[in-house]
Amino acid sequence: MDVVVLDDVAFDVEEGALMGLVRLRPQGVRADEFRAVLDEARKVARPKAACGIAEVGHRGRGRVDIGGVSFTSRLLEENLRDANAAFPYIATCGAELEEWAAGQQGALRQFWAENIMLVALGCAVGYLEGYLKGILGVEGLSSMNPGALDDWPIEQQATLFGLLGDAARSVGCRLAPGMVMRPLKSVSGIYFVSHGGFTNCSLCPRRSCASRRAAFDAALYARYRGG
Ligand code: SF4
Image (tube, rainbow, N blue to C red):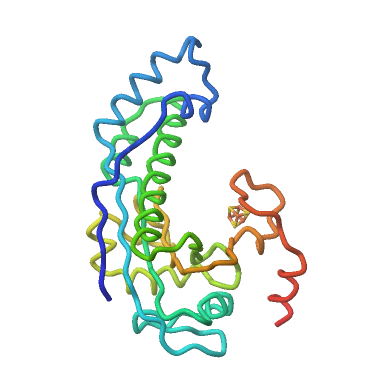
């Protein structure tokens, strides 16, 4: 599998938007303290991403081969039904920022650091998506992630890391016990071209989720649950 490592991702964050995220007013009493913390973070942040360009091989009975590795997921199989290639990926806020965040003292600074790491991860994901859309010449790109839905169990994270191999290591990511990624603010999955668009959220029945990106589709959910 050919692998691309993107280790020059800019930590491109707008101060006002980030202050809104952590519920600070620009003229508030903690605003200058936050700006100083953000300035520190800007100096150390190195968000990164890596992805593979993998051939989609045999598929059937809820399994699909990607880059010669077999994955178990009916949804993934269905989403890749007409695909010749898929793009296993990993994106991360970067170990540098996680190490910096661990040194922040107090609950408030920890909260700020958590959000700064999330934004850094968003930079890595956005950069990777833009890169893939550019080389593929498409606008419609969707992804699935192990553990996001019952259909693709979290244990498949190990299989995905096996496929990503050196690519994961090259961006400083590893899989810790319990299928936990380190740095914690990392995401892994498989991108695929999808003109209709696919979002995990449309099949996720979780009632309360601040990160929901699409409404729950009960009919689609019943279709997949019912076989
Ligand atoms: S609704 Fe929330 S928990 Fe469910 S897939 Fe979307 S982001 Fe994940």
